[in-house]
Image (cartoon, rainbow, N blue to C red):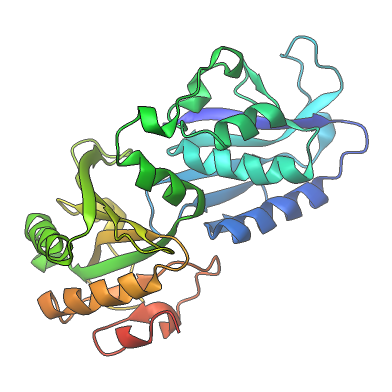
Length: 304
């Protein structure tokens, strides 16, 4: 389970439907995959991403009164975050939300974060563990004080888009794929950094993340996140609308302008694995159509 928090706002003049609509537009702007139910919104960074959050909805202001924060009167918490697996999502949502409702605030039920606090964190190069640190005592790091991969990772945190690479579960070999990707990166002479991370929901599932700077003027930053092993709990039946038995082997994170790299890389990838797929995640409406699916025969049209 992740941490919890809530958006708090004034009781007087509260309009639930307006704020709910704003949240929906923010999800679309961020390109997040989301599903709205009567009493919650399920948000994923992209389809099948392990980075997710549940936003609980309280439409009746009389049922969501806040009486636990000293010094705050007549405030309510109509939107509360549960089981957060990735604090970057919450930070981006709050950044956009407080642009429209600057008087609202965020709380973890101990500390209150104002718009100024959220903007200071967002505009810094230090997003790590922000939800656990009182902003009044926080010392922000400059990107030059962190490891070199951060110079690639932070622009991608703010504005990154995703593509998912899929192949058959019974042919999965994450270590072999990493070797192939490294051969491509080194052959092209790109600057790169590698780090490992664990799946934030399932301990023991390791990812190798390759941060790449191609040196181009625009769209030069990328992350290729390669899984070392599959997780059937996450992958089973997720992509049956394409073909049964597919799993997610890697994701590519990039910014606008990087479409040529994606196309060049995937053309090389399809030489290694000609029967695989690339799944385009950059639309919030996740309909089961073929428009977002690329193969070795259609990848040349990507970015057009």
